Image (cartoon, rainbow, N blue to C red; front, side, top):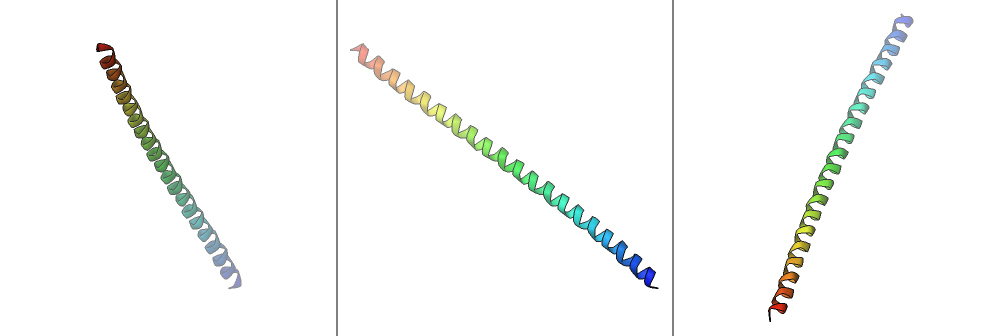
Length: 74
C-alpha cells in the first residue's frame, strides 16, 4: 500500500512539474510576442514621425525657395 502511495505522489509531482513547465513556456512565448508587437509599433511610429519631419522640412525649403525667388524678381 505504501509503495502505491509513493508511486502516486511521484507521478503527481512529475505531472504537476510538466504542467508548470508548459505554462511557463507559453507565458514566455506570449511575453516575447507582445514585446515583438511593441517593437513593431514603436518602429512604425518612428517611421511616421520621420516621414512627417521630412515633409515639414520639404515644405519649409519650398517656402524659403519661394521667398528667394520673390526677392530676386524685384
